[in-house]
Length: 215
Length: 305
Image (cartoon, rainbow over all chains, first blue to last red; front, side):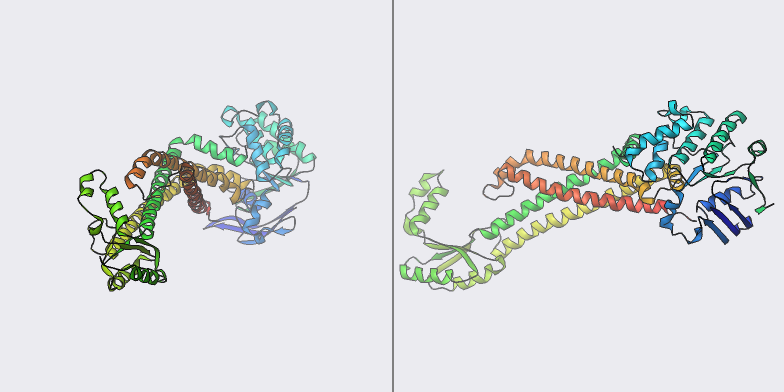
């Protein structure tokens, strides 16, 4: 599904990625790990077409992302569910509206919204929080909103950038259980984390990075 | 309610003072625009009225014979520059005089029909031809003197009258349009500033939307809708204010101008005229809002990669 072929990316004099190559297959759950500044987030941003490689190739379903026109970037992103460390939920919308936004963005028929939102909120355990605003939720609940928003569009791939970074161990475990469950349903997941406990516990393939290289 | 409409209304609720200032400036612009449109309409109507009513009177010699009058009448009738030709015999001239001096009957008693010359009254198809026609008619043997009716400020020739009227009409048109254009530009800039501020305050939200696959159109729609909403409300408020003003002053204006139809006299035509102006203003307002918001949104969405 995802292929990085000798990818290099520099930000000025900073070498963010240096000749990185790896592949993630359909249905796989892969951890990207390494210290801060290792290049984990850069990889996720490249898959999202937020930044482009200076050299090498990034392929999504055998399509070279460098060749995607700007106008087609939204279509690419609509196939990817993304979960952020800082949740990135819309603060002035309720939980249900936050999830609805993803459906609106993906141009899903509004008649389907209610059922899909209900289903996904039930999946992440937020059925009774649907009318609350983000300011009324805990960190773990906010991350579940972020996950629900990523899942509701039924994406091919889920990118999770330190989804447990701001959570306590017990809440993080809950999020991981959800991700495992989703992965078992056939979704491909790439998760950036430096949470050793989670990596050991989950037993999935690990791509270890340091200074922009895979080690 | 659609998601974009909800977002636009939420944004307005969140910053009511920005919304109020945008609507206020828009209202002011369209209030002035409606008022100027009516002034331009009224000046055009009065100019048209003066241009098309009989303006030239050829006073005939006292001893003119009927055949000579008929001959001149037929000559003038066949002239394509002349229209609405009418013969006014001495008796009718006296009647006109009596009517004009009805408030002082003594004046009418003191005169006899013989002192009023018979005349031929007519108008010209184009007022620029008036002076030439007057000169030509003056040369006729049976004509003693040629005069003109429209006179608004002691002008010596009909051309002066026309030029003065045209100047007034032009002042209203150019002055009014300039004023409306300045206000329109101000509205445009205010809208641009407010939408840019809105884009800045929504920066975080826009980033999130963009990351989850929102197209620029999806991001822009509620903001464009907001701009259009300001504009439409502004047009309606400005138009209603001007409509009420004209409703209030129109009886006095109509009575002051008397015969000159500066404004439609029947309520239906009056309302239709205002509806027409409203339609045009809505189109202009929406175009203004679309351009303003699209410029602001495009500038804000430009992002280095």
